[in-house]
Image (cartoon, rainbow, N blue to C red; front, side, top):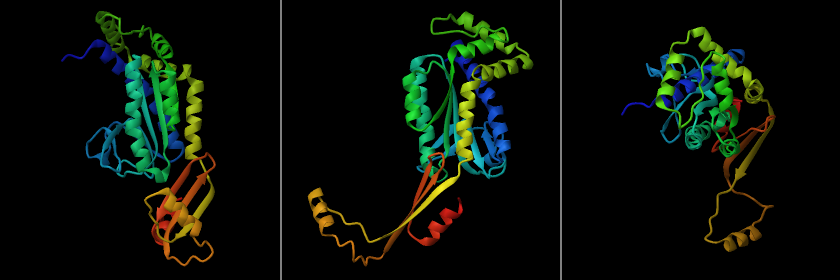
Length: 286
């Protein structure tokens, strides 16, 4: 089945958005001694150009950008930021895309919870307030480029990029040809203009990323637990057990260590460990 002109033009705008964001993240990575994993050749991927990370259930998720600590072309580092980008012109497709992004990023955040990674998303187009609020409620930092600001950026290079579901294919094809015939300097102008128009939102997003990367520990709590869990079939039985429990004369053997690390930006990292060696190994990472 042939690709529709509207779909192809949407891909073009999506690529422009991603290419506009990449230099910001690359500069950030260089300033903080991080590695930016992005689409393209990377030795450790063995020729695979997609950015793909695996969650604890063995499921692979394709991403746009991952910032790594200790990573290199030949070595996978610790992920400390997952950042996705998306352009959608139709509201229904936009809603589906936010759910798709959550389905990809959240399992990875859970898998790598020991690094409490930043979860960021750069959206452009027709994303509703409800969709954006849902992502924020899931802990995402959202950078939203309104649809008209994107069209305005294209206009800077003389291209009328505005379209919707009623735009004839012939008109969309003209927009595609206009972009494809555009010299590199003018394509760069569009990307730069997209960032400039949305500079205030961009700054807030980058500051949130900065807070995560530059966070510092404000408290480390270690709770050694003794005893074994006791199970009951009803809350009534459980209440009776608690009422009878002798808190003063506990002689049960060691069970585990519970560790909590708190940061000044509100992030928390927690771990449960069966022995002191595992707990110490965990703490030394921070």
